[in-house]
Image 1 (cartoon, helix red, strand yellow):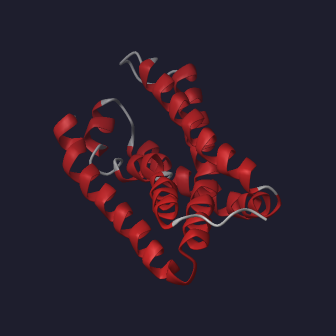
Image 2 (cartoon, helix red, strand yellow):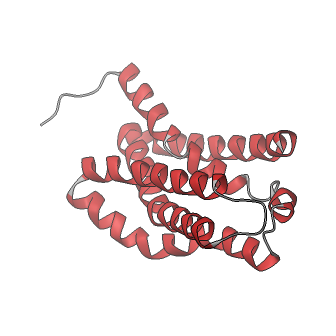
Length: 168
């Protein structure tokens, strides 16, 4: 088997595992404060509803697929899930950058949809990797590790609620 990790290595690994979901959680939490800016860009109420639901919808199905991948190949899941979220964020950025200001065209909408779908498909994989890793590293103290994960998610939510309106 693998050699046991030292206490400092466990702490560093836990911090890295918790940091996996920063981008995912921040992007989800940034939507509410950005609603008025999205409306000013021409996003309709129905479009805003789709934007907020899409990242969750596919995650319900993909959770089973990511769990199965995690059981069979942890390393692959650990790389693919964050890489997929990063790819989705790149699609979103490209869709927003290609927006001309006169409503969303086919290219803009396609890039945005691909971004949201990719992020939605990979978000569950990041959560599985994060919680599984923290649980394994913390062992019998896993409740403390899970509490830290939740605390960090709340801090990210607070920062997004505070910072997004100031940036926009």
